[in-house]
Length: 148
Image (cartoon, helix red, strand yellow):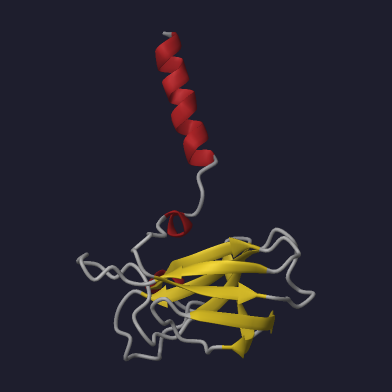
């Protein structure tokens, strides 16, 4: 009886406290890009999650946005802002897998903050590098602000 009761409580609690599945699906694909973030806009609060989003497929189409069609995008890297400079690893695609599970070379990086389970667009102002993914690349973001 105790085992049954415990199993039921465990299943309920694991579903109640589970995280967004997109954030759990970040894969170490063996190749990444490192992006340093030096400062943020006052809109960004300590504890906010900053994410780099890649498009699952059809890269030639610009009609899709993670802020309009979030299910067309995956999280290629994330970090929690704690009020200090930090670096984020952004994972590239694993060319040996059948599915796209990261960024392709020269793919545009969509940046966002996750708040209330919604993507909020942010704009990165680069000190070094540009807003496209490069294998083993390094970029430095001087600051970020709300919006595109």
